Amino acid sequence: QVQLVESGGGLVQGGGSLRLSCAASGSIFSINVMGWYRQAPGKQRELVATITSGGRTNYAYSVKGRFTISRDNANNTAYLQMNSLKPEDTAVYYCNAVTGASVRSYYWGQGTQVTVSA
Image (cartoon, rainbow, N blue to C red; front, side):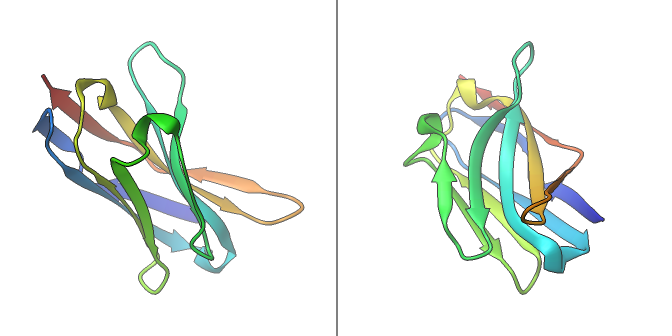
């Protein structure tokens, strides 16, 4: 089992920055991929960015060049640095961890609200 706790959300003006953190605990040795997803009101949850244990990253097109995902394996924490924020980035942001190879398990944090004002 893996437990994830997000922090760092809040209210920011358009063009501003926020940094989200996701602290993992439990069976952290089994985590392969960590990622961030978001869900805006009335919309489906969508991928924002992922990072493998080896540091390979993947981003949604809408955030490329503005957001940066990173991972501190020593402290079992993933980060999402969000710059040049837009009102359309407003959503609840969820941390995700994937364990296993042939049989995968998915874990989610409780979510943190990010609100970007115009």
